[in-house]
Image (tube, rainbow, N blue to C red; front, side, top):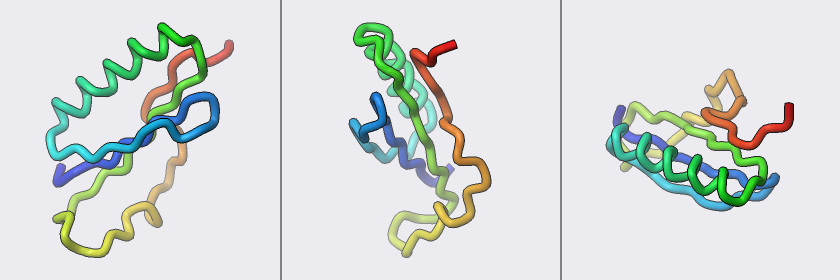
Length: 78
């Protein structure tokens, strides 16, 4: 992984965006989001766009996404 952009959507609104160059740190961050989501109870979705290029070039990765499903979903209604 060169890097990943992580977007957190809470109840339909963009809450936070972060870029990670380390997958372990990213997974730890997503675990923190899951803990926060269990506290507030709102639908929380985490989207990840993986980038296999250096971050100093113009990015077109989002154009090639085939699944627009969240990487993780918390507090989803049954």
